[in-house]
Length: 429
Image (tube, rainbow, N blue to C red; front, side):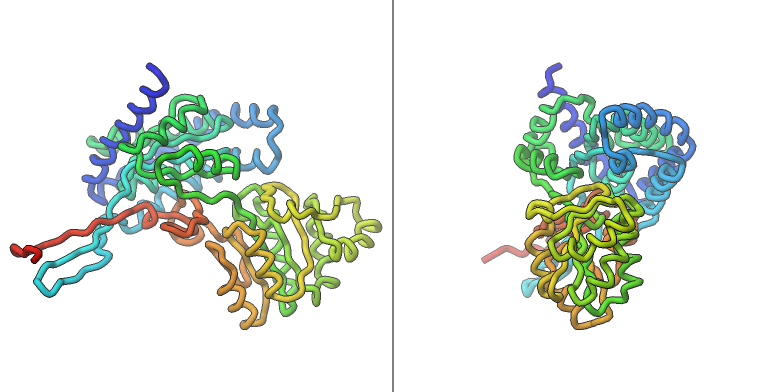
């Protein structure tokens, strides 16, 4: 069978499954999800065994420590996957909601009803927990999903998907056989072929680095919901509580530096830079964070670096401020006021997640209104941009697009709608 024939069969099977999925009741979908959650926990050892060779191969290939952290599956993360599935099961069914209702002067009744999108292709890198998150959200929202994970997580992804599918079949006799499928080949040419099948595929969502997302967007003939990168900022205002600012900055950068909602640039108002920058730099250096700083920041930090730390610090380039590191590297810049911070973010940011730390309500409101990002925070870490943290259960991705979904994509964002007209014989004149 040729690659084209393989991908066409995969897509056609998904289209059939999507129609079967649309007929399932909420109770039937939830029973499958709960069974999948229990099965993941029950088979935790098998998942970890599958993850081990993926981790070994990734380490040998030179993957960074931060990226290895994304790939790793342990008991805690497997339990989190299962918890995510249970949370999705507990959420309201997004399908069949009446979004709008009106009666026209001629008596024609119109209803706008939420519906599944149909067939969704998810392309992602490194994080095997995405297999469970994406599959569960698509399943609950009535969408068949075709998953293409990175080669570095091949064993992990296959094992997770197999466990979930088998659990679904055991829980429900009419479980759609191809509701969840993995692309069975590693050939890169499979993706352009799959994303050319507009008669079967309704939507593609790539999750990963900017290079992956641009490549998918350029080759796809079906709509793509994307976020190119997560260049997130924390701005420490002149009126900030500096203790709070320190805690937020540390959380935003070092809790999990390889995720898309981690801070990549710290902006500090010049009024507090002399006091705050040495404090936060010392803490960041203790976590082995390399600083790429503007001229003003370098001047403030050179003295303490020479006497207290051997940590790296160098002058930031223009390109650095556009860069998503996904690593223990942080840009630092001193700015003159909230407007300068906003201008920097709107120029260099990626419209993902940005935060201001301040006690000044006027400054905060200006920041929240003028920063054009999917998620904007006041006195909180950017790390909260996440479906689970937003109460959506798991998430399928974070969109920085402006048309359609924006921010964390949960169940409601995975639905479309149709209009239903109920008449009594009306004809248009």
